[in-house]
Image (cartoon, rainbow, N blue to C red; front, side, top):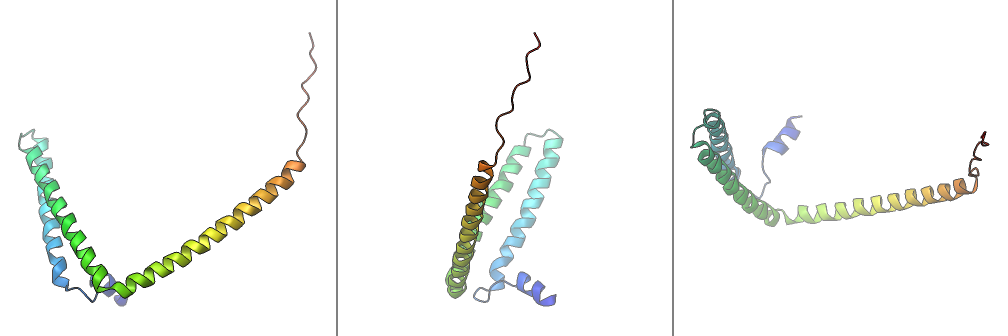
Length: 128
């Protein structure tokens, strides 16, 4: 269990863990701005929208930083990315074959069932 937690908590070996520390700070700042914006909105203060916009801007900056970290991770762990693409291709191929087989079986069963259908129901006689 500790190995699993260590894999999740520790970033990839190619990147320093200190690169991820600003994200914690950004999360704390965003939560503070979000709560402050809601409190001000509850008090019907005019500054509420400005505070909420500032929180959104902080999250946009965090998104740019995460994109930079993702690019760095791709270049530092390229062998793992190549393995992941190969595994995904195998999985997609397997499920494509599975869906094709299942659809083929469904069509065969549908054709066999279509031949044994009952005729149209005869309407009841008119009592007029």
